[in-house]
Amino acid sequence: MDLEKRIELISQVGEEVITHEDLRSLLETKTKPIAYDGFEPSGRIHVAQGIMRAINVNKMMDAGVEFKMYAADWHGWANNKLGGDLEKIQMCGDYLVEVWKASGMEVGKVRFIRASDVVDSMEYWKKVLQIARNSTVKRIIRCAQIMGRKESEGLSASQILYPCMQAADIFELGADITQLGMDQRKVNMLAREIGPKLGFWKPVVVSHHMLMGLLPPATQEKDKLERTIDLKMSKSKPDSAIFMTDSKEEVERKISKAYCPEKQIHENPILEYCRYIIFEKFNTFEIVRPAKFGGNVSFASYQELESAYAKGNVHPMDLKKAVASYMNRLLDPVRSHFSKNKKAKELAERVDKLEITR
Image (tube, one colour):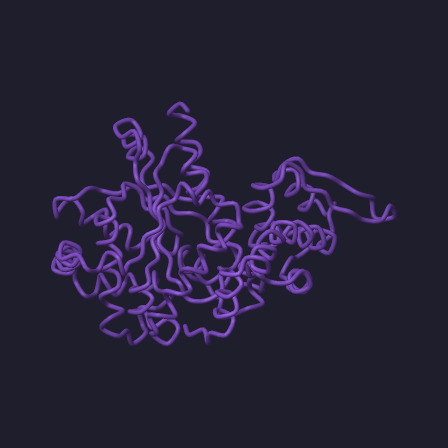
C-alpha cells in the first residue's frame, strides 16, 4: 500500500490527527510504527467500544501499523472502577477480548497487554515519576476528564497519579501513535509536550470520534471537547447505549425511543450510528417502508442518506427501524459467540452480575 493510501486510512480513523505532518514523517521513516489504544475494563461494553473500536483497529492495521490493545486494569483500580476490585476488573478485560473476537476485530494480529504485566517494571515507574516530576498538580488535574471525572471533583491521590501512568504507558509500550478517543486528548497532548524533554519522542495523536448517546443532548453551553464528552454514550445511563450483548428486542426498544429530530442532521445519534458503524460495515443501507410512504429506498453512501434526511425525504421512525435491523445483524455474531462458547458465556454471566461503579 502506498504512502498516501496509508495516510488516508489513518485519517479516516482520526477525527483529529496531531499532526498530519508528523504522521507523514513517521510513515516515511518507520516501516511498522506502533499504535496503542487503552481501555479501562469496567463492565459490559457498548457498540462504540466494541464494533466501532474493531473498525478503527482494523483500519490502522490495514495501514501497516502494529497495534497494541492495553487493558488498563491498574488504571481502573486507581479510578475505583467496580468498587476498586482488581480481580473483577481483570476478569472484565478477558470479557472484552471475547467481545472483540466476535466483532470482526482481527485479534490474531493484535497484541493484548495488561497493565498488570507492565507494573512490575522498575523502568515503568521511573517513567511515571519523571512525568510527575515535570508536571504541575494543576496540569494533571486538568487531565481528569480522561477518567470520566471533572476537575472540580474531589479526586483521590490514586486518581491524580492516573494521568502520569497513562502518559508513561505510551513510552513504555513504545507507541508511536496514540489511537484513543477524543476524551483522552489532554493526556496525549501532555505526552507530546513532555516526551522530548525526557528523552523520548513526540507521539502522533489520532483521536477517534466519540459516538453520541441515544438520549437527548443537554442544552448547556460548553467548549467543544467538554460537550463531545457529555454527549457520548455512557454505561451509567443504560438507555443511552446499545450494549454488545443486548437482545434483539432491547436494541429495537432503545433505538425506537432514541433522540432523532426530523430533518436534523447535527447531533443526531441515529445518523451517527449510520455514519460511523453501518456504512463502515455495509455497502448499501436500505429503508423498508410501505408504498404509501414512498416505498423502499436504498442509499449507497452516508452522504446520500444525510441529504435525504435533511430534506425530510426519510422519516425518523423509518430510519430508526432500519438502523435497529442493521445493528441487530451486526450483533448477531456476538450473541451467538456468547451463547455457544463456554468461556465467553461464563465471563458474560459474571460481568452481568457486577455492580457498575462510576
